[in-house]
Length: 86
Image 1: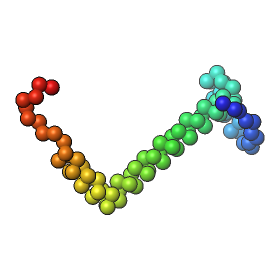
Image 2: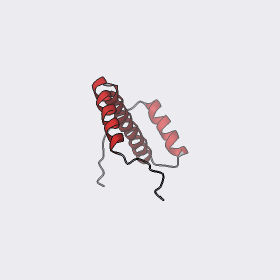
Image 3: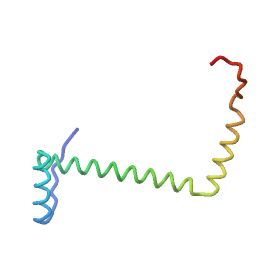
Image 4: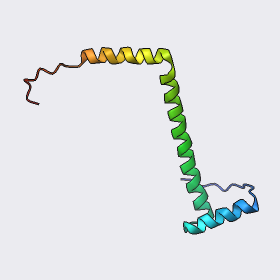
């Protein structure tokens, strides 16, 4: 994985807080920032997927289509005869 150096501007208070947390975790500043960014970016992706899912199933037409498909698939499923030795 390639790495890139970037320059950001933060306040002295934030920098001090960052350095405290990095020291608590026994990590370098860069390692701590990268780990926290990766975690937060994954959270944002998860939130986005959940939002898209909720929007898709909130739509009345999609809900009706999904219910119809569920009924149709249920009719295609094999019936339990009770005499199969599975």
